[in-house]
Length: 160
Image 1 (cartoon, rainbow, N blue to C red):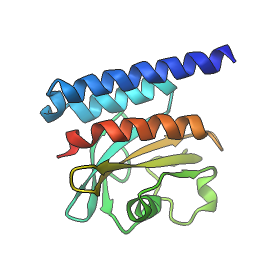
Image 2: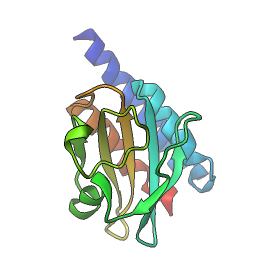
Image 3: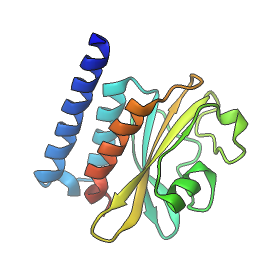
Image 4: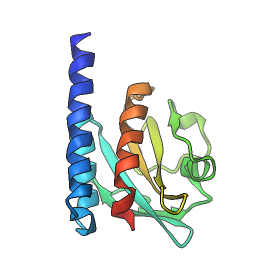
């Protein structure tokens, strides 16, 4: 129970840090998506976090954690698990990517993934997605969903 309370506290602090970045106007700094991806990755120990922006009906990688470069830095909004997230505006958790034909592998060792929409509240549209991949099966739960959706609600301004 203490570990769960500690994880919630760490996630809360991370969301505050991201929120401060948005409020203080650094949202227009092109390094912000990378910094946000690093905060998210470091807070939860995720293997890889990617932030994609919707540009002309494509998802385009604008920020990611660490030095690993994904195999798919740009793809149409009609492809992958992200296409469902784009259409439904809801988070998708894939417990085993080998059982989902829509999966576009960024890393061949990925076994599970969570994709969260980033909603532009001003224009009521999906501005982008947060894609988190793990080398473990069934790596994501409701706590991850809540944290990443919270981050998505904060960072849409950075994708303008």
